[in-house]
Image (cartoon, rainbow, N blue to C red; front, side, top):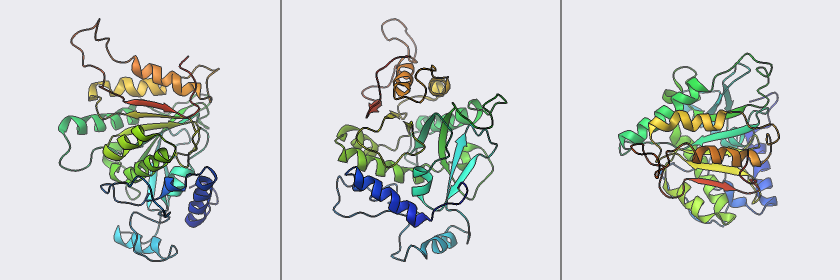
Length: 305
């Protein structure tokens, strides 16, 4: 990814050690599972995919070449993340493991929103597929690079991170996105949240294909501790007509006194809740999603700003 990288094995070990320090080794267990496999509530063993989407029992040193041959290329990264905006002009970060992709993100953004999951397969309703495509289209077109003073570094910007096909560098974001692969990390996040007692959210992540928008102050999604500030939004029930307002709520500047602080997540939450019509005052507009659809966890501040 950037500069001289640690090996995928060392990064995986580092993440596991961090989880162990917070009492959460289960967080990354099963990150290499198929997107359709159920994620068990707990596990006595710890495993982590340090090479690719499949495990054959081969050594970690041999797996990258074998997996590369399966997907049609013998060398190069197996995973890729698209960054929007990309002030440097370089949209993609590539990696040989999910550990690198989600545990060592590009630095310099004030907030990181990881798009996890999304509709996969023929059973998906048309409106849900349309919402996902529109979400990615708005991110691609609305969250554009600029030529301001911060254009080179991206400092102060909100970064949107979408896992894409590592072998497809061109085309629309919706065509390159691979929601089935990002669901592996969705399952890993659910396991860690369950360890920390966030059972309702963990169950939602396990049962729903999303998409989910998970916002962090850190350039990493995993590992997390019980106090790690996160904002998790289930977008599945939101129609395509609201995708512009949704991304605008994230991308509008955060007041200076809240930037980089947990309270910035609370400010985004308030914007999200205010983007739907008031059912007692406004008539004819689509209602807001029913039930819980926003979770602000950890040391995430109070709503203000």
